[in-house]
Image (cartoon, rainbow over all chains, first blue to last red; front, side):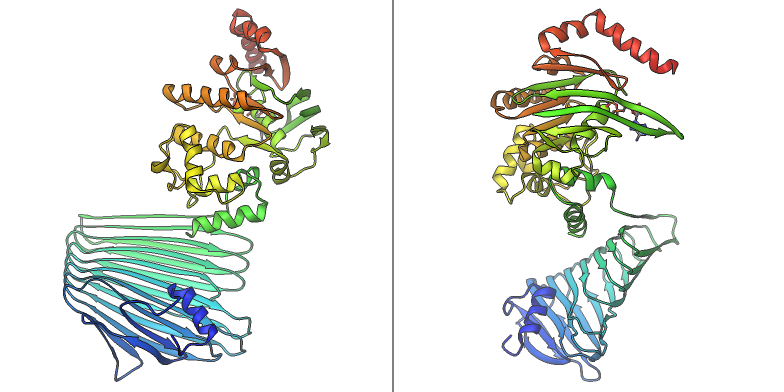
Length: 308
Length: 247
Ligand SMILES: Nc1ncnc2c1ncn2[C@@H]1O[C@H](COP(=O)(O)OP(=O)(O)OP(=O)(O)O)[C@@H](O)[C@H]1O
Ligand SMILES: [Mg+2]
């Protein structure tokens, strides 16, 4: 990480928990340029030739390895679209950590649109962690529009953790998944918006294979004048099970629109949706205040716990 | 020492003001274990909430060790040493038992210390310490965790609102032991327990019978307990209930 400045290093810590160069494969991207790469015997990373982005190729049977591909932007006014494709070999078991941090102290908008595609092989297991973070007090907006596409082969499983807690002014995230037989997708999304921020999160999951399942759980907090739209759609096209849950806390003048949708195209599809939006319960605040916290401290604790 | 002077409380009941606490004055001395009992709807929980600052009295004053706390917030009263275990404990999505015990103790206590509070209320610490205080906990488990938070706070004045409710027979023994322990170790402290259980009444120094928003009886256990466990009290509480119904 020698090529990174202090701001970039701080962003790295926020989005990928990286304090130093990680073990295993990695690809660092800073201000639209390559800032470091490592490949291993089982994991290869290649720059795309026709457009910005990389191909990450994970060999069949690769176990207990990790890939880190953080992106940081610290220059005001940068706009980029990056295409990253992950080819996860059959029977492998890997951790993939992505994430994008933008520091914008300038007056121009900075934007990173990452298009990630995952081709998950038969019986492969992937844990994917993606964090988005913004900082800097310039007038320029910090904009992130990630698109994630997941193609899951038979018996594969993927657990996705998507976090955006701070500092991103505008985001439209789209996640699409197609599952074959016995594939299993679990998504935990945590979202907090404040100020004038706007966040759209759209999921479309096709359960195409027999025995496939998806569980999408979103927890979000909208404070100040921020706005969130949570649009979650699961289609059950075979004997399958799908569950989505939107649980949101609304504060101040925040606004949240939850649009759940389920489409069953097979009599054996079992689909469930739960959604709840509400302010912090008064008795929760009261209880923590009887334990000596101020109302504000109590709020913080409740939200931190909720988004943990 | 806690003093209540002429405390009244009313609540809006379908547009009609209902008097729930009627001009109550009483003193809870230090080193005393006081049990408040009385019929359902008598105003016990309301009085406890007034002490904790969750409800503001319509009139009257509260003093803690001589200091007027009537206008003090819930937070400041907690900091002044008042602890309160809710009759209906609150559930939290995301906060764990350990989080709650840490908040309660006011410092980052070690896991082992947090576990000791759980053991005290008869919960196997390792099974519970990292659990979320959410709807997956049973009523009795939640109730015991609620008691543990007050133990962790170690307040000068602890108020427990029906701590035995929903607690099974075996754990009830344990609960009695907790109060007996607290009772033995109280020094410069006082405990108020709201309860309908004779076995808890039995370990009281003082018993207060609250009915229809007023103190019906109060005095040392030896005097009050025989009165309320005999036919006398049964009649008394039925009379109170009758009166409620007639209103
Ligand atoms: N906010 C309120 N609005 C209307 N009525 C209320 C309110 N709070 C309490 N009450 C009424 O005041 C009375 C006393 O309630 P309280 O909960 O203090 O009784 P309690 O003695 O604790 O009863 P229990 O033994 O059932 O717990 C009840 O009749 C209750 O319905
Ligand atoms: Mg009560």
